[in-house]
Amino acid sequence: MSESVGKVEIISIGNELLIGKVLNTNAHWLAKRITSLGLSVRRVTVVGDDLDEISSAVKEAIQRRPAFIITTGGLGPTFDDKTLEGVAMATNRELEENKEALEMIKRRYEEYVAEGKMERFELTQYRVKMARLPRGAKPLPNPVGTAPGVLLEHEGVTLIMLPGVPGEMMAIFENSVLPLLRKAAGNMVFYETSLDITGIVESDLAPLIEQVMRENPYVYIKSHPKITEKIKRIELHLSTTCSDENVARQRIEKTIMQISSLISERGGKVQPIQI
Image (cartoon, rainbow, N blue to C red; front, top):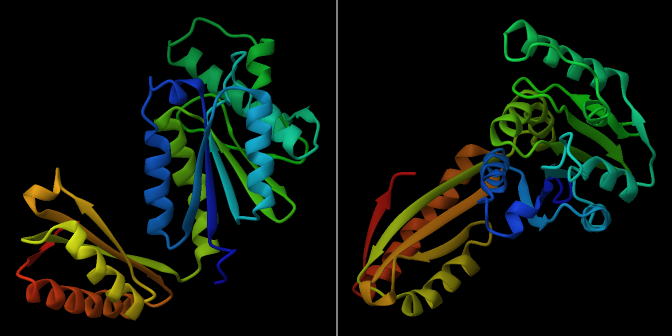
């Protein structure tokens, strides 16, 4: 699999993220889920509920030619839900009422009435708004909420728009997006492990990491100090992506042996951490 095929970008949309009212758990969940498939998240962008900002972020991401661009947020019925319009602007497409999306929305509200959650419903302009998709887009069923997800192919890039409500985002991802990503990943696997390092400060550990990564170019090593250097406790995270799980494991095992040996020579101790 070429590097370009495995690239994914995430665009999180919502003023609530920029003002610190809501933690961006969607991007965190998506990044971890996508990485576990053997794909590479290359960028996470956060923009507010502003049409020009959304359009600009999407357009710039398309120019970098990732395989997938996944947006979260801004698909609902309210005035500040502007993702679909922003994507349409970025891709030079018109918004069109999508019959399949409208039927999905209608069925969901009918279910709400049948379950006693609503007395009755009508397809107001605000509900129909959720079915106005960029021309050529395909709606993705939302098994949890009302706003469908949206898939759009544009200039070799697959754009996927998901709701901002975490439960809805996850449900659509698992049901409709995951199969697409798995197909793109092919037989790639992501392999990771962590080590607990004590007895050595990060500034002394840095040249050891650099040396081992130079000798093991397919393994990425990242140090995570716990509290302060004075405590001398560091989590060392090692990861690699490969088309063969056995090769991936061998890479990590070799790297662990090398870094552990160097750390021990300097009086440090190494313990594995269960992930």
